[in-house]
Image (tube, rainbow, N blue to C red):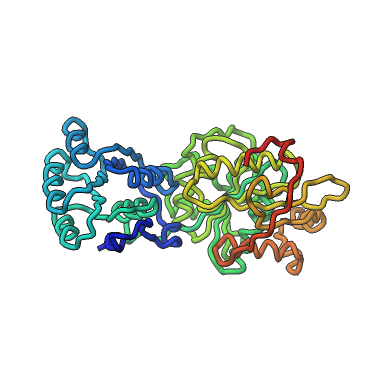
Amino acid sequence: MTNLAFESETDETPHGVDESAFQTLRPVPRISVQAFCETEAVAAPIERAGEDRRMAKAHLKVHMGGIPTAIEFYQTASTPNLIVVETRAEPKEILGLLEQLAEVCDPSSKVVVIGHYNDVWLYRELIRAGVSEYVVAPISMADIVTVIASIFVDPEAEPLGRSVAFVGAKGGVGSSTIAHNVAWAMSSLFDNEVVVADLDLAFGTANINFDQDPAQGIAEAVFAPERIDEVYLDRLLSQCAEHLSLLAAPSTLDRVYDFDAEAFSQIIDVAQRSAPLLVLDVPHMWTGWTKTTLAQADEVVITATPELANLRNTKNLIDTLRKLRPNDGPPRLIVNQAGVPKRPEISAADFAEPLELEPVAVIPFEPQLFGNAANNGRMLGEMDAKSPIVQTINELAHVLTGRREIKARKKPGLGALLDRLKLKK
């Protein structure tokens, strides 16, 4: 029996779900879910669950009204894969209502009951009657997603690898370079298998940065999604280091690369089943597929340089991602190329204040180190392992794999910069 069901009846806080377990839940498959709620306290977290990235493929609709409303509704409508019903009825009355609901439902439809009675006898009778789960209110968004995943996600399936999407607030800010170096650090520091996917098919630089010239890569996968499985993906990967593989972009202009919103979803799903860490090098553009990729990644890292246009773009990205990913933490922020000689720039502290987001790293302008690495097709750690910048990259690898958290810093005042940008906090 789920541990969600038997808490104290006087406990008004949402039931607890282990945060790390929730963050690693596999995505719910493409199913239809309809909920019939008697209270806003239950309807609200179910609606929030429908906005969660783990529920991106599912279609969820919330109706107000409990089991009687569901009975009336399904007399003239087909039933979905899952019906969630809230009821404040007495235990014995609940069983009678569910018998009536069963008469108008397809036998293949699963049912989750959210009740207000913490009763072992009721739970046993509901499970005996074929109910998939009984949860006692109050509930949280995480409770709902976890229950749905427990019903429709194969418990024997291998855990998905963690995906980290890197995107630049503007072109030329060094997002790809940082993504590649962090991926290399992850693979070398922790002996974890890491896959880097270069999603900039026209102008990607991962093949140059890793000194690779593969005959095949991500283009073959995205243009033939029906062929994608672990075996086919393995043929497309090129080995960059002992634990690092690359899904390279063709970096040619012999065709146009216009894709629909879900074009890369299949590739990413298969890659996450193939390696514990997947680094997505997302180009600086705003299309349906880049939006979907950023919305569904486990972690998003924004790289920006300390100037005004970057601050505006970063603010827009953060605000949009908070709407797209309401149940996840904010993206990570890296301030790159700080301290360019004779260039007026915004301090890291002033850059962070209107974003309400502290940078996880501030990387100084170091053209010789970065230039030598790029021109030789080597990573920064291979060029100078003792460099403070390499230590920062290593720290990022620890943070993005959940091995360490960076301490927050205090925020000084920003002055008149907000007025110039007209940013809303």
